[in-house]
Length: 114
Image (cartoon, rainbow, N blue to C red; front, side, top):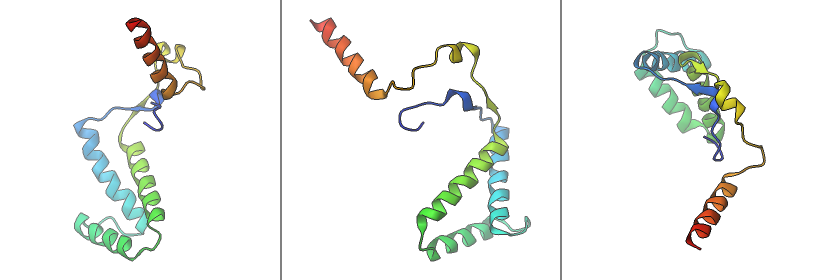
């Protein structure tokens, strides 16, 4: 959820099996990004990532890279399902914000009190 918006069209369903698959995919994608072979254990990978982060001057760059790794692992592990016709038929207008929703609720509450 970013900026108070919920993207219904990219719903991910997480199961125990897909979570186990996700853990393996994270290791696989990180190792591929580091150029390491897949025989490297998770402990060695943890030490490598720790040394990279402590030596890096641009932490934001590493955070962005790790975010991309997580996105790739999610895409490989968790199936996504599109929105149903009922949901897409009632889309909101693009200019409606969370702030407007709060204002409407306050207005209605004040009207009821009056």
